[in-house]
Image 1 (tube, rainbow, N blue to C red):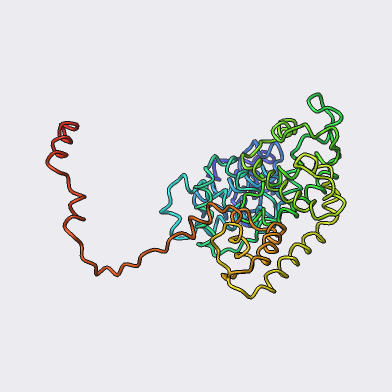
Image 2 (cartoon, rainbow, N blue to C red):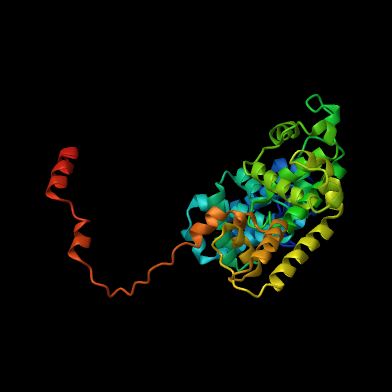
Amino acid sequence: MAGSQRCPDCGSADIVEDAHYSQNQLVCADCGYILTEGLLTHTLTEEGFLQEVRFTDSTGQNESLSKRKLHGMKRVRDLCKVLRLPSTFEDTAVSYYERVFDHASYHLVNIKKKEVLIGCCVYVTCRQHNWPLTMGTICSLIYAGQEKFASIYLRLLQTLKLDVPALSLKDLVMTHCKNFRLFEQSSSVPAHFSEDMQRVVERTLQIVELASETWLVTGRHPIPIITAAAYLAWQSLCPSKRLSCTLHHFCKLANVDMPPPANQRLKEIHAVLLKMASQLPWLSMLNISKKTVVQHVGDILKHRSFLLNKSLHDCAEVTQDNSHAVEAEDPGNLAIAMVGETSEVIHQGDLCKKQNAAKRSFLPPCLMDLKRMRTTTGAAERVFTGEEDISDSEIEQYLRTPREIEEFQQACPWD
Ligand SMILES: [Zn+2]
């Protein structure tokens, strides 16, 4: 091949192939003119636009990888870029993807799940770096259902034996609040509704912390709680003008989705605030309602650690000096019994004291739901050994009678 070419400089036909630093080039043996140079670019257009070619692309290191794997790695990187994650995350996420890909079970998984796995690798990386990315966000980006995503995510953690810290509420509050479009004036947001972002974030964080301390966060989805807290924070910063604005309207103004449980969470936070307000002497005089408590949110938050300690202390006192038996049949007592983890009966005088303590103590809402509690603590199961006699009549109730057979045949003649 080299012999058919001529040097454009001196016209000599003595062209040789020279491997210079493992790059093959054609060189004129007479004058040293380099006819072709080993390119670090793949195509002429890349060369023309002076595009940077990565080392891995230039060395052919990636060529040993399968197309499928390369595609996946690229998808992981793209996803990180779309989410604007720090560049170090990209490499971690890709390394997880490579590990999953090399795992024997990967090739038994269907293609849809493999796509979800790409999202999972990014999600795990974010969680490990305490980056506040929610499952909902990543699911909407990869068009996956949250249930499916969650099951694959858990399998991934098992397979790679990864450890993931719980989501940091603080970071989540910050990023979620930044999405609210209430911090600059626009045609849809009236002047008295716009608020300084820093103030809202600060107070929202305090309310979320309060909710967390009073058992409203554990086991729940964090976003509805943050939404409710942000609404309350925003209202309480200027109650006179914002009291009439509902949560629904607030979300619409801020241009964020209102997650359905947010209303319930708002009610629960209201209840906690009311309970705390009743313990502050200057507020307990005022006959405060769900609406008016909003004006005192700042005050309550200021004293929250004192109020929480007080209720804990009251609770401990009552359960301590109680050495009598309690019967947990009266719904009011049930919650108290749970607090003290005791099943003894108390005297009438103590009962009153205990009920007061229960009113002041903070329990997870699922423990306050007495209807549900009753069904779960209901009748003890009969114990079967498997040796009992099985009567004919018990078996016969599973067989069709001649009349039922006839009716079934009439209804389904082809069966
Ligand atoms: Zn030449």
